[in-house]
Length: 323
Image (cartoon, rainbow, N blue to C red; front, side, top):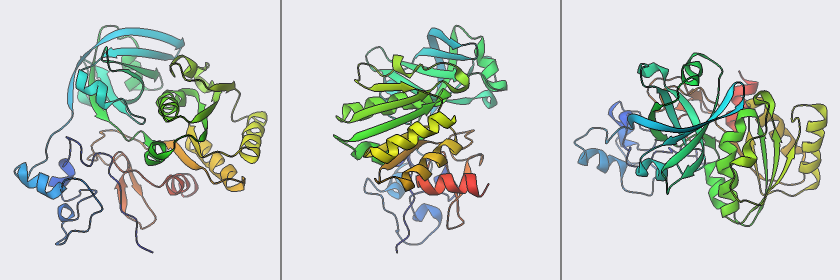
């Protein structure tokens, strides 16, 4: 069986070819991996040709700039939703499931950048909503900011299985989101609704302590059921839905352990739905340079999880079962 090619989420964008092309580690282009022949599966403009046109250098990088903090809403003592005014171009580029940005205080150095999923995008006002749960030094440094924030982006690989989201139309979908995992789920729900899918949401407050997704899915007509997903009763409810309902797609927003449980329940169900999950890799730079997101796949090759659309099942099993 032919080996499946890796899919780079940045391929064909204005940020391709990136720095990885200069170091011989391009995810898509075999020439930019040091091979002497073309062995890519890319159907757009040749990446190697783009590299040549750019003077054999990377094409461009994401910029960082000060964004106005328009509004700040407290969801719980440690969780906030902030509304930021961004550029018109960035608002359009972030209007996709899996989109995220890096944020930091304007007085902080670059290593304070922290990735945050984009919940909603207003392409008319050029505003984005980002949910932030205070957990460590980087998020604590953002907690008390009330004026301007440094934003770097756009980035798109916050969700694995994006191609399934794009192909499902008129289907039956189940969205399971826990805690801060409700943030990326909001974009998923709106995308599924736009494609005329029926969507049911199982939402768990988790450590956030509140179900806030209902305020950020617009006018979508979704049934939302609140429950403790990881409790015995919650797991029984999930089992019931997967056993007696036919779903075309299931989204899991939460931990890898949650993803694994849902994956196991899918295997025991009567259907064969697509599984889409939040990308829980440790992301630091977002450009595939620092190596914090590096993940080994079944061939033993290390890949950049901040850029590669990994196989959902294999990514979950390798991280959880193989440590």
